[in-house]
Image (cartoon, rainbow, N blue to C red):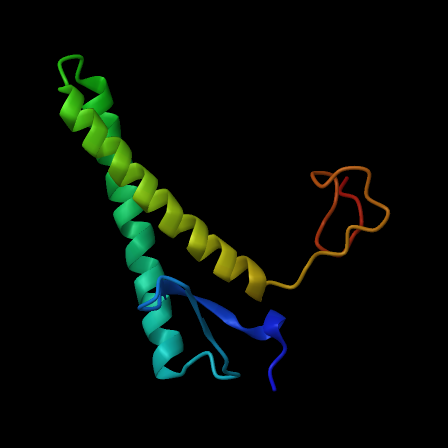
Length: 114
C-alpha cells in the first residue's frame, strides 16, 4: 500500500466535491500527464486573469458588477493555483534547514549562503 505522503493531489475534485489523489510511481502515466496538463492550463488561466484584472482596475469607470465578476474569477483561480502549489509542494523533497537562522540564508542542503 502507498503511504499517503506519496499520493499526488490531482487538480480536480471528485463527484462528491472531495479531493482526488493518484497513487502511481510512473510520472509518465496517462493520469499523471493529464494532471500535468490541467495544472499548466490552470496556471495559464490565472496569468491571463491577472492581466485582465490589471486592465479592469486601471479603468476608473469600471462597473461594480464587472469588479464583482473579476473578484469571483480571481478567487476561483487562486483556489486552483493553491491546489496546484499544494500538489507540487508535496512532491518536492523537504529542505534540510537545520542550523539555519533564516530560510533566506539557507540553501536546500541547510548550509548558509555567502
